Image (cartoon, rainbow, N blue to C red; front, side, top):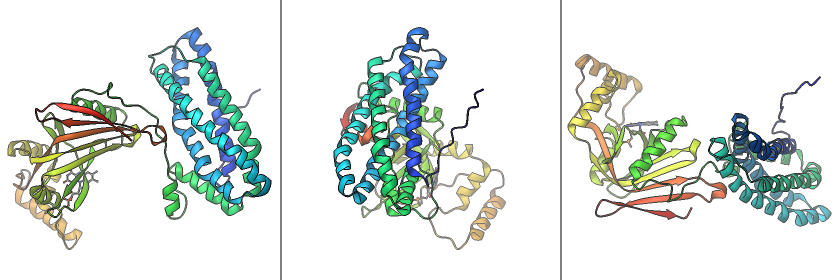
Length: 395
Ligand SMILES: Cc1cc2nc3c(=O)[nH]c(=O)nc-3n(C[C@H](O)[C@H](O)[C@H](O)COP(=O)(O)O)c2cc1C
């Protein structure tokens, strides 16, 4: 009888066991990968094949880069600080090969990723079996080498405090908050590799608004947290910048629109200098969009239409708040709200100083995170005749 045991992962207080556990999971994914070409030949990209491809992509896109970073940025540097004599000689002999393996496996993965993502989407029926086998073989040998030489050395040489330090760095890399405040080192150790998608000039729309719409809809479909939140950066009359988050309410060929109090800090800054920059960050898709241009107020009619679509309490709040001005207490703020409610009841009018701002873009950059910080960047620049040109920028 086969009683399958749950896949219980060791805790980060045992970082070497966590690394071994990662190896076991890599072996499982490599096994799936190795069986996939034959399965595809027999059954095509059926549901099990698509699921298998998706699982392999997910693992090697997300978990494997973290594992490599654990080794490259923490385990190996820490071993270098404690190893002496034969241990130091072993490290000197093995580490260059280990790092070369990581690079070679990363390069092979780029190609496998493309193929597997197409299979997962049901758009392809074949996988390069030779490449999959080479990838699996290189990984397997690599893991045996680490388990034979590197892991035992770490267990032998690291003090309990060093084990705790390694575990904490690995934990923080995965965004798991350890007890106690994060140190500067811990923040620096946060490292996530991106490999979800690619971006090429040939793939993007000629019109940046069309491209923005595609990405925005993909952000909605991916259920990104607050997909409509964007940072707005402005500068004051003296050139000093400030930024804040607002919610985009409309975008079309005219520009990108949000609503606010025109007497606020941002409103006053924009009156003095209309140039501003917007930024969307969609971490779940490893994407950012940077938009720069001059800002103009929306028409009174547009502002009315949007104001009147807001819930009653939000309309009253817009009247009650002199946005960005100091106030003595929360109680004073509540009093101002009650006064607005008493005065206007169910039909508060839009204050003249409240309305939309539309940024008319001159430059829009689409950024897609790629492996090893070698990201894709495509920037659109508006030409004097209103047309757009695109260029690739270095990461
Ligand atoms: C998620 C989020 C959405 C926000 N949306 C808006 C908005 O649409 N309009 C707005 O005026 N402020 C919005 N705010 C508040 C602004 O960030 C900021 O505090 C306010 O506009 C005052 O900025 P200022 O003093 O620089 O003018 C939002 C804040 C967050 C965190």
